[in-house]
Image (cartoon, rainbow, N blue to C red):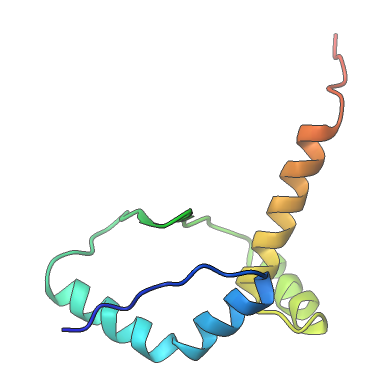
Length: 100
């Protein structure tokens, strides 16, 4: 059994291209992991500096993300990751507004 090694990426585009190019090998590895009992409900996967999470989303929001991502030449998962990252950075740098 060969182990798929996930490299470090310089850009989001490079990462997106790698995941797309290795989609078949990733699916095969997932099947092997499932058959070997290494995958279960609620499994959290940590690879290098990334953690895979599952977030339930409204289907309309996903459809919008798919359209906007396609307009930018990205996969929608990569696009959503970018949006979340940008929102977190913005929230972190913005002064907290006092509520009373």
